[in-house]
Image (tube, rainbow, N blue to C red; front, top):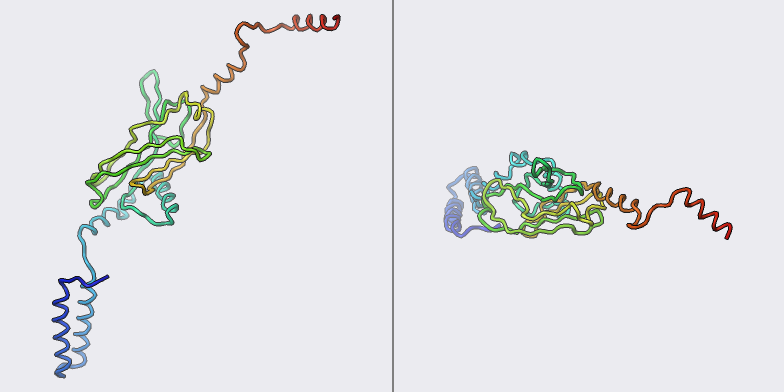
Length: 249
């Protein structure tokens, strides 16, 4: 902290008046104590700076705002903070996070928010909801989405420029991770991670479950069970005749 220049003049004048009163000897000890106390308060106040804009930002991220956070957002934000050593490196408040999966059906495209996805779905897109304070608004930010599989390998990376506006805003990735007919996804399952960063600062880490594709598994079973084309399976009688010929030969 430091004394602001515009306060030096009146602090000097106040100190001079108190000094004159002390030297003159006409002021009682009680009054002098009060004057010294007033000077001390004025000195400390001159080193503090009230910033209305910063106060509004603090109110924007108040407990009332955090009460609007979903359970997934709380978990994801806490994991990101632990990775940063418990320090919140951004004023942005994560309100929600998740995955939007899509699957074609006779009724049309079905989209749902879920923390469990299947290899039989067409694809999945990550999204976040943010509360942006005034001091961080009206600028372009780089939002990065990553999906990491159970082996620590990147399955999806997407970066997009987003214009941040004051208040609550939803950000949905404009590219999806294909699931159906994706060999890398269809055969594997387990617990994966969704990681989100804004301007290279991690704000969220959320785990989700992935189940293998049942359709792809059934196709592989059928392929292994079917004999090669052009070959007719031998009957039990044919096998017996073959054994008799081998024994006679």
